Length: 635
Image (tube, rainbow, N blue to C red):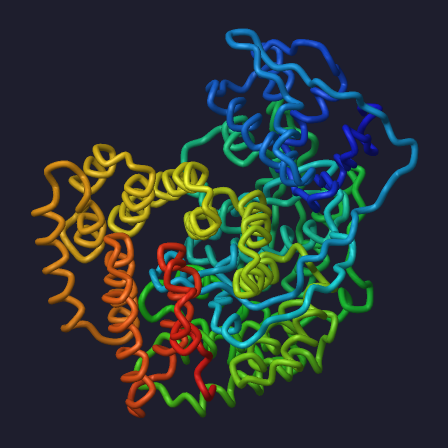
């Protein structure tokens, strides 16, 4: 272990490798594990030229990576040092020597104490909502933390307890194979792997890759070192599940990802009644092998649900994650069956509250009052049964925000943050509240943490990219949007639009046109094309696209109409027509308020879209902007 592992001082900055944090006059920066490894390696050799080839070998071993990987690490390191120091001069601490390597130009002082994570001033909070489908799933594990809550709460900054993750080792739990004779227990195998993942995530000494990224590799023909490189992990846990009647066999093997060497492999046999003990045994064996300590209250771990209810819960989670048409209804029905079989099952009640929330906001014709009451019942029941369950506290906070009981919402959201500040659902809420407070920089940092946990989620990449864009970090946003598109090529229209918009703002019109030319016909393409009115030779095409967008807006309804009207305003502002942008928006807002038959969700969606659009900032000085973005009168 490096002598600097327990921390060091660098030109007034306090560096804590175990927590991944750098703190200074500008605040706290959270470094990705590989970026922190770069900083520690450079700090071990201050003033020495570190050759690129040597750095790559030390950091990645035998894994083949491109030069871009190292360049990206140094780019991110400079940015985070500058942020923590509150001064761009901290970027210059790292000197680039062309065609040679890098040198750290700073004195390094090791710390002899073993500091804990410094408290963060990022407040507790509700979740961001972007209206495109890939933005709607705010939380990393697709836990449906859609950000209606953000409309209601502006929490004052609060101190946060030290995070759970002192990342000594990083690990990914891959989806377990279904080895049952009928091959019909995939949901069960997934649930077993996810439960082990959740147990390991309670360790203070492990950084555990989120479910979304871990399970995204299910059908990819990658060997273990490739998985390690893709997810930046040290260890891989893989396994299989064979379920036959009341018996279950779980085989698990832990692999050192860098060397592709097995640490251990073992088969666990038992009845379904033994399932929780088997899962705990595997998690404990992993922790012991990695010299980590598992967290979790012993009394809570002993309060196991009925096995039949647990199976229903696992099946519901499968549909909850998959999100195909009809899956939320299927998940809701299965969660209901779970709590009917075991009325004391807190986690099933919490997940049921989440599906009621999704149904209320995304299914037309549903009785809002009835669903709100069901959400309330499920969330309250979850908290009553297990007050220490972070997701239960978050779901109850969500209910209170929806019903405009802000103080109660704040109370439960703070509790959720205290219980598990690194939970993807909680992080999603936090980033959204930071955005609503206008602290987009804090939201960027939180999304960076989410992406570090869940690097293969296109949803998280897209949210992170949008926050970078909203914060004026256009080049960085461009990189992240392109990564999101690589992860989800099917979103060529939505993410292509975002990429083209940034290229226009950077004045790179030819590149923007290349992106637009490859986009499918539709509103996204017309919006991007309409932004090109100042590009040489593109004015006529841009005007024609704007005309089509106007026609589409008049024919649109619901959130689609909200999004289109905001896009029209952005086009007008970019063309210098501020009055033409603001007046139609005001008329539309008044129309929404007057139409009692129209879901109030559309008003919240309009406020959300307006609040997070950096292109509309020139309108903020107009006194009518406050009227336009005022919170709706009722829940």
